[in-house]
Image (tube, rainbow, N blue to C red):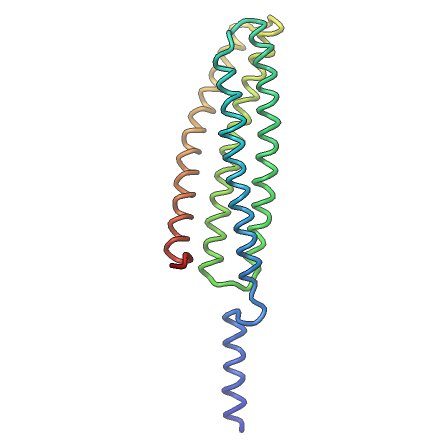
Length: 191
């Protein structure tokens, strides 16, 4: 009798430790899907709303009146950046919950890769926002006809530094997204 109880206890403990009771895999998958949709929406905002505005800025002449027009575009871009930040922050907080779930280690690892990719997205967005804030400053000074050479040089240097940071962040972002996607295909995708 003691042997049967010991065996049953072992089986129950094994099932509990592998997550067979109270498994949160379904909820974790929903959160991952939600994060993936947020990332897609983030990219859609970038491609469909911000990129056309940035192109308009590039095509606007560098005059006082052109600077005023560009300020309007920059304002819209910064608003869209806020929308993107909210999307990514919400997705990140949802994905972070998975670490406390009873799910497979593979799913936890994928969630961590997703968090890493979201962090890279947020960092890229932070740099982009800072670039547009510098442009807002520049266009504001041009529109008021108060841009001095030293200020122009400082803004130009800041833009150059931020552009380099953006290149590095973009590479990191792509690398982490590829790592996340490759891990999903290797460890979690079902044939």
